Amino acid sequence: MNSEYAVRLDGDLGPEEIGVKAARLAELATKGIRVPEGFAVTAAAYREFVRDGRLGPVVGREIRRFRAGRDLEAAAAAIRSAFRDAPVPQAVADEILAAYKELGGEGTEVAVRCSPVTTPDAVDHEVFLHLTTGADVVAACRRCFGSLYDTVAVGNREAAGIDQLKVVMPVTVQQLVRSDLVGSGTARGENTFVRVHATWGLGGPQASDADLYSVHPGARPLIVSHCGAKLTKIVSAEPRGTRTVPTTPDERAELVLSEDELRELAGWSVLADRHFRRPTTLDWAKDGLTGRLYVVEVRPGVPPAMTIGTPDQGVRVPQYR
Image (cartoon, rainbow, N blue to C red; front, side):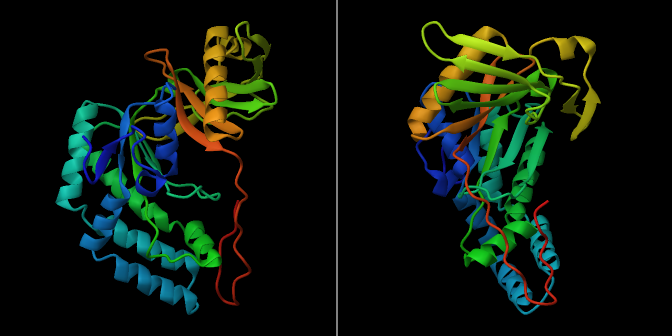
């Protein structure tokens, strides 16, 4: 699979080429932590897309208009529109399709996510779930490329003095973990314990509603469990997207995770903290088809959020919600 535009998540490339999210997952996979099979669409693929579609001049023009007083949302939207209309270069598309074929090809359910080369700063980048064709995967990669020009992301880079033409957006494509059929949550080390949150379905649970576990790793782990209310869960909606539904009485009364699963997550958390040499939050998901746990995102530390400075009069900059 490994080529210029699509590479395995095997830890050989750093975040500057495959993005922070993909690089972290690849590093932990080399430590024996289970992550979904997949590949990264590289920064080189993004650059070729921009070059082939002559998108650099579009970005430069819209940024100049913004600096001259144009509404930021309008300028960013114009850039994203140009990205959506530009074709993916054939060489890039061919390598994406070849990599997808190695994952199983047509009919194989995958998730496509943006993987910025820097730690995200309160920007909700594109995520595409339940894709089952090569054409949809290529189209989702193009949408991820364009999401680099999310309104807040553009405003943050302007506030920080970052050159808009030098940023890149790798993409991660992985086999889909059907956590909507079972559950998901987080695991994070705190002092000598690992705290685990768990809920049914997709998404990050609220601490007040989720199951909460405290696990002391070791040869004979100590586990303390608290059953949360778990009143609702997020599930997949056909053909795509998600919806929130009530949980059943049995789901509300039952713990999401077994002791064996908690021991596995706690061990992964300890490994991740040691590897990154700081507290690390693992987003995990349990596949409802195989029963296996996977780490789907790694978040070392908590980066400070960058805020956009007060704009000049007449220029509207959206604030974080």
